[in-house]
Length: 131
Length: 131
DNA sequence: TAGTAATATTTGTATATACAAATAAAACTC
DNA sequence: GAGTTTTATTTGTATATACAAATATTACTA
Image (cartoon, rainbow over all chains, first blue to last red):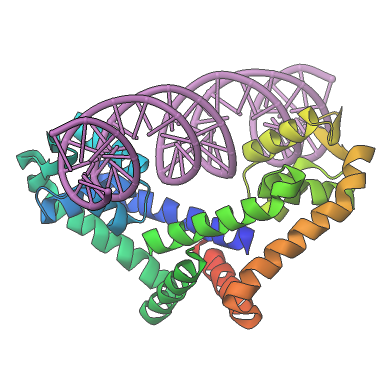
């Protein structure tokens, strides 16, 4: 179980990295950016929930996107809002294309149905392991 | 798929870390050590295959176990042999116990059958992603 | 057999992520 | 409304792993 889940995650990670190479972003950065474009002003807490990552990781991801001038942060009180820059918004079609490629890649290899089933299974297990 | 496989791997990793806490080793170190005890003089290349990790990672794992005086390395020519120390051999029962706990942990949560099915599925997918 | 190719391992450095502590602000509580 | 608790975010540091280059040795080839 231990090596199986790790090995699978690493393989998928690699495939995803390949898929997002055209936009020069890691999969996590790309997913985060797409969420920010979709929901302007989204807060880190919401990103934590959607991406299943910890707050510190989300901060790090945002920082990097800020460096690349793809997002800006505004802080009011204890909460922070994240917005996509025009530069990022222009990238949206390419981001979607990469996402599509990624999906095609693994669905071609595994079949659409089997892929869906596996994802469902993994989510179920992850939820059960929550505590 | 991307977040599902990553999230699952992280959850399992955490569960495994808990399980091996009693011996003060990370899951990867523990699995490697058990292989070395089982097959004295095993070479890094063989460990790479069994643990599904890269050569550099294997070197790092061995280094750490060497620091802890749990293994020794002998180099002859281009190849290296790894042996468990008496100290490590004495730990074997505890290592097995941790392995058992880990298995019990996730099988209790998921059920034995479902666990086995998931592992099979993940392995199948990982193999298919090989290229 | 000298020169090149293949194999095994290690080293330098990078990525993805997390935990725990720090900071800051808002929300309760009495 | 002063003091405490909760919530949101960031920062310092650590872990697990990988890639690419370096090193060393053995095997092949012409």
